[in-house]
Length: 222
Ligand SMILES: C[S@@+](CC[C@H](N)C(=O)[O-])C[C@H]1O[C@@H](n2cnc3c(N)ncnc32)[C@H](O)[C@@H]1O
Image (cartoon, rainbow, N blue to C red; front, side, top):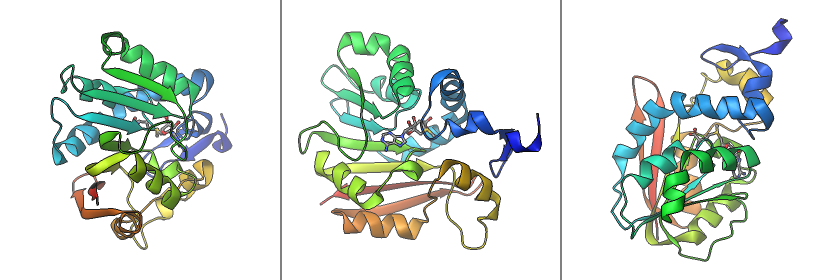
């Protein structure tokens, strides 16, 4: 394998063709990366979800649900009065999430759909909580997409995003390769705050995990 087949992710040197699938998993490599992300994002997700409360009747939407590990986590925290819905524009992600959550889907508390964040097939004010783990980097039009998130949330509902990459002035060179490969956008706390405030959210909070430099943010629909 030549150097051209590799990519520097900012943390490791990885196989370029595999990492390409982080944006929209497809085919066999898509399956592989989703299995991997269910494991490699677990510590960050466990930390992230300590920053909001899930009730047994919460209606939760996870956008960019990938391999479906967060759907599984949420399904374990709700009763039959709650609902967990996953949406992802990748067919392979929908397949993986559905496989992992088969029992909860059969029980009627989890549903997984294929679709884009930009135009979601849900009525206004459907959900109490909308989450996105490691996905907002890829959203095509952040402000419009946040407005769409706002639309499907109930008034006072909570939005939550969790990312392992945070924009830091003067420290972004390490991500150059990855940003180019995946055409991704890495947001700072300030941009996340401004974008959420512009699209109908208040009570913004940002949390940084200093040890790993992870970020998660929450805000509420006005
Ligand atoms: C890096 S993976 C993260 C998956 C999972 N949330 C996790 O933390 O392991 C990004 C996921 O977001 C999905 N995604 C990216 N852009 C999207 C969009 N515009 N609409 C819906 N899903 C999107 C991808 O298909 C992929 O499954």
